[in-house]
Image (tube, rainbow, N blue to C red; front, side):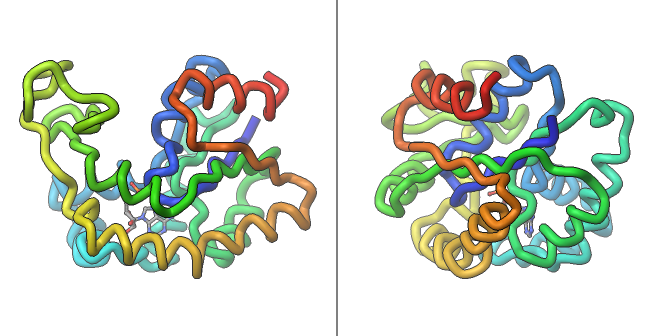
Length: 209
Ligand code: AMP
């Protein structure tokens, strides 16, 4: 199955996709993770993307479309994939329709106030990328990753003013994708405000897995 997870930044797409990888036996492709890796490795793509990402803006369509095309052409995506963070604009969705056949777009619905709390409390391991939350999923020792002992950091784009801007960008440019996939008969919506256990159950039901 070729699945798209739609939802605002911080709606829980990354957490849900980590669960669905096991359940569906296909990889998840997070454009945000690919871009952050490119920045960490200081590649030409990373250098171009950094300024946009730090400011909470979208990286230009052509850059992410080329990057996505290359990623889903890889062998591990042959039997399907879960897209987390792509498409984010109508032109991206139109390009995606030319290179892959999408089975379903599952939208996680979460009100903005909850998103703001989730993102500003999120801490990410600088070494292995594991994610924690200061109140809902705290690490055993403050500021230290349970998995690898790396330092936990607040992502630059999770700062409160940047989060507000990312939500505006989401409503303006990404939310219209719901109508796009609805018109194709591929949209499924679900409540994304619950904990991971319940969210996973809702997703399994919605997708008929
Ligand atoms: P994420 O980890 O999915 O929240 O993405 C973090 C940042 O990466 C976003 O705020 C954008 O700057 C950039 N980004 C990720 N995916 C895309 C995309 N499909 N289109 C444009 N920018 C993206």
